[in-house]
Length: 343
Image 1 (cartoon, rainbow, N blue to C red):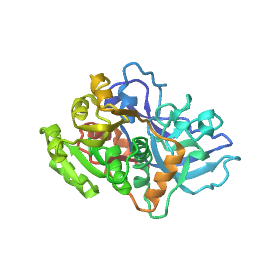
Image 2 (cartoon, rainbow, N blue to C red):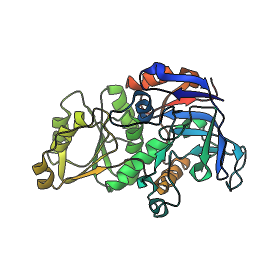
Image 3 (cartoon, rainbow, N blue to C red):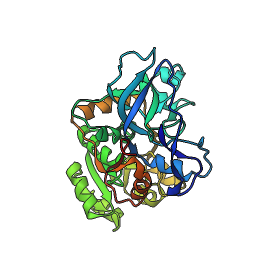
C-alpha cells in the first residue's frame, strides 16, 4: 500500500511517500480503507521530534482517521465490510485496571494512532473494533476525520475543569482545532466564552461559533479581560499555548478559578508563583485525550448536529508537506484534513 512514513525527525522533507506492507489484522481488529485523515499538532511533533521524548520511528503519522471497513476479524463483531466509520484515536489494553474502570486514557500502556503505532496517512489502517464509531449517512469522511482527537480533548478538558452553565471561560487560540471545538461545547453547556486569536478574521469566525466576547491577543489582552470582567476575573482558563499566555492567565483568573491545559505549543516551562497559587485557591489541571466514554458522548453530539466539525482546508495526501507547512503557518481556523484518496 501507499503510505506516508517518518523515518527521522526534521523538516517537511521527512514526510516520505513510500510503499509499505499492508497491515494484517488480528481477530479483534478491522482493516479500514482510509478516506481521510486529519492533521493535529501531534503529527507535527512526530515529524519534528520533542526534546526528551522518543517516538518509535519509523512511523506512519495520522491520528484522526475516517474510512470504510475493508476486512473484519473473526472476533470483531457488530461490523461488516463497507461500513463507514471513524476511528477513536486512543487505545489501551482493555483488560487493564484503568480501562476496566473507564479510565483507559490514564493506563500505562495508553497509546495513540500515529504516535505509538502506525496511523492513518496510508491507504489502510488496522484498528481494534472497539475503537470504531459509526458515521451517520450525512457526514462526509472529511468532516469525520476532523473531529475525534480535537473534540475528545476539548470535551474532557471542560469536564475535568467542571465548567457549568453561567461560568465565564477564557479560551486561547480560537483558530485551533481544540479551541474551535471547545467554544461550541462550552456554549452547549451554557457557559459564557471569551475567545482570543491573533487576527480579526479568526475572531469573527470564533464569534460565529458562539463566542460571547472576542479579544485580539496581539494587544493588551490581559487588560482587556480585566476590563471585560470589571477586574473580577474568569472562572476557567482553557489553554494549550503555555508560556506565552500563562503569566497573563494567572493575572486574570478568578479566586478559586480553574486553569486546564492539554498542551504547551509555545514551550515547556512556565514561572509559577506558588503564593499566588495557594492564596487565590487556583486549581491547575492537566488533561490529555480522554476516556472512551467521553469520546462516545461527544461523537453523539456531533452526529446529532448539536456541534459541528470545523474544517479549514483539505489537501490531497500527496501534498502532505504543503499541509504541514500550512498548519505551522497558523493561518488555519479549525482543522486541516488530508484526502487519502488522492495520492
